[in-house]
Image 1 (cartoon, rainbow, N blue to C red):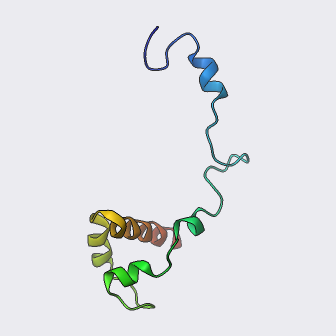
Image 2 (cartoon, one colour):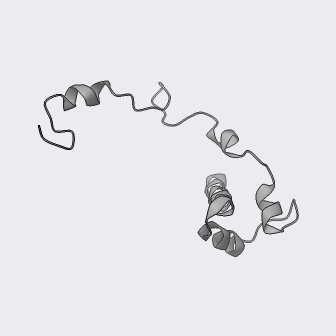
Image 3 (tube, rainbow, N blue to C red):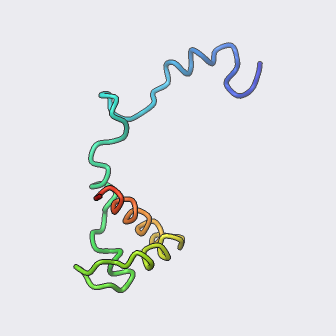
Length: 85
């Protein structure tokens, strides 16, 4: 039997496999942003920037390059910033 899904039963398996997402064909989960933001204000606090102040783009980019929770929060902030436009 060939590897990589090219076998005898691959078309049956692939056609019945669920692709996830919503049934309306719109793609991903509804309200994913609300689920992604578990600790509002945590990025400001972690970066030492006062609540209500904007995080400078250069600092946000540097934090996004970092690993761990700080990097993850900064990358989400960058994504949400793009959606706002």
